[in-house]
Image (tube, rainbow, N blue to C red):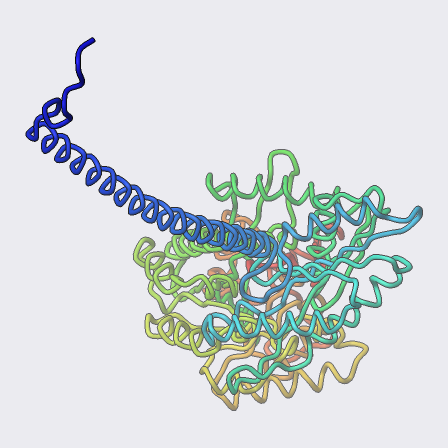
Length: 551
């Protein structure tokens, strides 16, 4: 058995030292690893905390953005259903309101829609500017909201158009009462930016069973009734009736036909003589527009002239009448003149002076032989601009007449604001001469006023010898009416001119040299022909006493 070796002899010192160094390195590496692990753990913890904070921030921002988007969506929906100027509901909200009402309606209930249009708003906008117009719309909206019940809806559906929806009320009485109240409310003066503004309102109303109500149909019916209210004088209301729809369809067909006729110039100009009161000599003719439609036949001017004005077709139509009348009159012997009626719309649309200048240039007619007739309503629109246009027309050399004087507003300030060349006494006074002493006094005053202002005075609508005698005695300068001749075509007007030329040459002298008694004087040629026509041909074709001219 071998004996044991000493330990020092078994493990050399170098190996021990090497082992110790190795052990030290491993210990140091382990500590470094532990340090790094601890550091990374701290960093990971910090990162987790940052991620948690970031996640919380993101969640908060998502919540805020969701809330903001909800608010934006609500605002967008509100804007989609609200008028931005007045804050009222708009057309979309009106339709939605009617639809919701139909869904929750009680059996047997009725819904009413009142379609309101402002009268005179455009004039305010044009004269005072859009900022004043906008404030006026807001003031109107406030009055409408104040005039309805809490459950009623007020909507603005157009520039100066509003709709009021009334439910849960006995109809149509409640809607009629509301229409009356709203019209009175709008007629009260408005104070806008130191301006006192007076406007009016016209209303069309329609009702329907709430459960069957459809917004489009309800608004259409109310709109039709509104057109009727405006056509019957404005400042009033009308309830829809089924026959109104048929009338509106007929009106639309007439408008289509009128547009085609204007485009193709399918009109005629007739002429009614103007006679000198003292001698009976022909002074000229008034040009009167006539339209014969292929389907309708002769269309009364009282039907198509207002439609032409409403659709602004009167501007090209009026320009055509001016040129046609000037071309015809240029061929007449001197000093015969032609009188052409002007519509208020021709002044409002502008370009009238240029239309007259073009007509005179195209025809070669001296401006002194052109007489332009306006009614007092022309001066109501924008007096300053209108007087400026009239002054320019006078500077061209044309004469200006005020037609239908004594009716309407008849403000003497108009005669002072513009020096008219002639006043035309409305035929309503001439027609009642025989039985109304007041008519004679009014005619006497108008003649005196006209002569004092150096204006000629013409009486229109003369139909009897008695009227002729009275008007001549009162000093009228010129006469016009069915007693002498109805409006005639151009070829017949030439026959009247030939008769007048023969009378002037002394071959015929049939006009009384002094006021005549009813049984006395023989009539002039034009008068005699008119009296021998069948009675129905000599009568006026309208309630005004003669076919209405271009207005």
